[in-house]
Image (cartoon, rainbow, N blue to C red; front, top):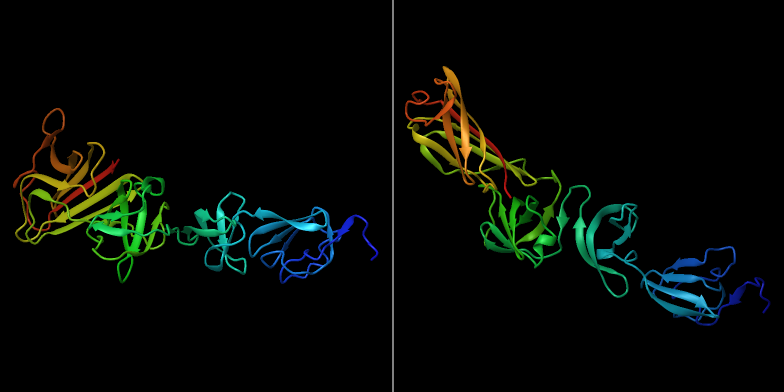
Length: 340
């Protein structure tokens, strides 16, 4: 046989990829790296191959080097060939591992992956780019109404202030992560969501500010002192932004409601430090009064402000301070504080 391309070494009978037509692989005007279908160098097809050509069998993730007239197994390739559940992965220009389907449509990304000896991605933490939720691909289990058991090393995956969602039958439940131990997450969804003693499915977490579907705030039920609730209306909400908690309380007196002494309301999440904040007392239809909120790490104390002296001083609320309380009067308490 006459070699029409002097710089190309004729292939031998082992030089083909299963299921692939590669007669033209060795043409001198083509790239020295070829990617073909198939899984191995198995068939007995002959042809011409340029010395030093690398052939990638993408179904197995192996490189084969054409050298010295035959193909040499050059080992496995990195994790950019095979993906989870028929998808494949590749790295984008920022270094993120981007997930795409068989049509090349980007459908998410992995924030971490596990790779087998052939360079195939076998599992990973999946990010839905359109919603901001990660799936850890790990099992969560009930520990208590406010705690979830997770795999060891939780602090390397989750952060205080992260948002989570999960199902225990029916719709998603939502909560914030407020403390982290090695295998335990303490969470709060206020009075809106708690962890049930049941199997957890469809579990996700998010570092994002506002992942799709996550509530803007949660209700909670503060413990009070100095207040007779009667038929009054308590509205208490909180939200976390990272490790900063914002709490808003509004209590409207109703029939049978009253103030009996020092007013206090508990925080939804323990504070890192004692703080001073603000409040407001409204004698509906008559007068509004500025108030101060003096807090320890668990309780907010609302005090009236006495402006009679040279300096404004706090005054403990009572049935007649700062006014005689009646139905429709309003108490407002606000606080923003660090939780760690």
